[in-house]
Length: 331
Image (cartoon, rainbow, N blue to C red; front, side):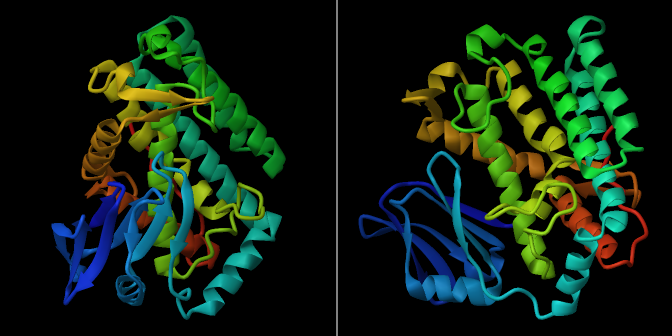
C-alpha cells in the first residue's frame, strides 16, 4: 500500500495535473503522482484538501481518511461501494445467521489469543507472571474453539486480554512509562497512546480493503452491530493487533527508541509530540513491509499483503466460497 500521511497544521493539499502537491504557506513542500497512491490520511483540523483533489482521489478509489492529530478517526471520503450488491446481501445473511457467523467468530478470537501468547513468549522470560499469562491465554483459546455463543466468545477474549496486558508490566519498566494496563480512551500514558494510534492506523488499512472489495465494514461476526462501529473491520483487526502494533510498541519501549519525554499530557490524556508521532507512523509503515511466511498460502508476504489476503479470505467465507476462516498465526 502506498500511503501519504499529512499532519503538519496549515498544510493544504491540492491537485496539479497528475500529481498531488502539499503546500505550506503557499510553497510546495511535497509532490506525489496521483496514480501511485492507495490511501491519504489528513491528521488534524488544520490540514485541508481542495475539492478538485478530493474528487479525483475518490474517483480513483483512493481511501481518504480524516482523523485528529492524536490519531482518533473522524471520517473518510469515499465513493459508492463496489457494484456487487449481491456480495453485501450474502454478507448480511451470514452475519445474521448464528450457525454461519459463530465459526468465523471463533477463528477470529483464536487467532488473536494465540498470537498474543506468541508475543509474550518472544518478549517475556520463562516462569512467573508471563508464563502464567501465556497458559491462561492458551486455555481461553482452547475454550473458544468450542464456544457455544458469541457472548461466550467475548468472555474468553476478554479473559485472555486481561491476562495478556496484565503481563506487560513484566516486559518493560512499567513505572517509568506509567503503564497500569490497557486503557482505551483517553489514553492515560505513553504506552496506551502508542497502542491507540497503532490500532487506528491498522483499522484504517482494513476498512480501506473492505471498501475495495465492496463489503460493509459495519457488519461483523464477532463484534456486535452498533451505530458507527466498523464491526467487521474490528473482527479482522484482532489477529493483527499483536503481530503488528503490539510488537511495534514493545520494540519502541524496550529499545528506548522513544522516551516518556516524547509525550505530553493534556488533561486526562497523553499525546505524542509531533516528532514522536511521525517517528511512530514511520515505524508502523516499516512494520507493514516486514515479510513473513504465510502458513496458509506458504508464501513470503509482507504484513500489508497479509492484511489484503486475510480480508479477501474473509470475503470468500462470508459469501460461502471458502468453507472456514483461517487466521494468520505467527510462531
